[in-house]
Image 1: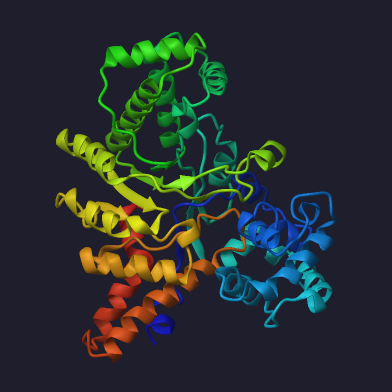
Image 2: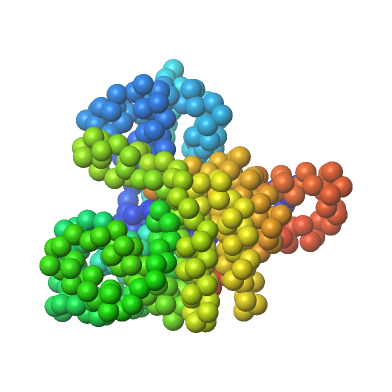
Length: 449
């Protein structure tokens, strides 16, 4: 009742994903379901590898149908993996297909999906409308031109597509040569020579301003952990000079540089009233052999066991002490940090806005029924679930939006079970209002969308 009467019909605000703005601006039609479903989906790639599928049929030179067929062959073996739910939910919601996918019906389902994907209703924007997507935020590097966001803003597309500022490459001093190449490209884009640390900050600040002028009001970082080392401006200037002279940094210098950059980004976010997001705890690119041949974000990441609490508190406290802490969302990848995050957010709410510091929805490897329930329960126990800004896809696929339905059903089931157990009052009107707030209204207010 809670889902069908209160949550189901609400629009979707997807405030963090990795969708390609050029594809949205072009309103393209995908040639087949493999392109929209399997290209770039490292969740499925990992499952196929675990099922003994050769890389040729995953990221290699196999035809699109051969890749789909190998995925269909894998699906029956994904029982109890969230991919099993997602796969069939997506086939049902987008294509009206209620069969369970397997090698036996792969050709039939492939053909049926492809026929629909050629129609106007199944263009990229059509797929978003089908799921009632109202607003989405892509993830964009400071050097991006944002030309496709500009095209969308000037088009007849009613879906709000906004950029999000993700400057991780600008602060990553692990590889000095790569960082120097990034700085050189920034200098070209900004039309200024970047000779020192102050010049670097000014050029990046100009990009931050440029994003704001193009509708951005959200930033994002994907980090192993928060960097909050003590530093002086003189130290960071000297470290930047070493970077530009292509000298390797000590571990201490690396951490101080990252800490200084991260702090400055946070100051700019606060200055503009943005929402800043921190995705913490991924141990990335663990397979060097396949990183070399396939590149990053291809399915060789895992949960890391980084220590999060002390540096995170130090970073947030420094910003709060200067009254420069922006609205903030924290995400953890290690479930061992659930209660840490649930209690950390309560330290920095200051009464200026409900839920100023948020613990984000269960992320990546935790983005499944068990992970969501644990996140919702920990937040309920230690904070205010009623003020939570809810779900996001964090996805590269235009077929991933039924994950919002998945989340909403789980949320409603938790509340409904408590009512039936006599642990919450059977106040339908108030329960419905809280459900709708978590699923939509809290995010709309929080992000000012």
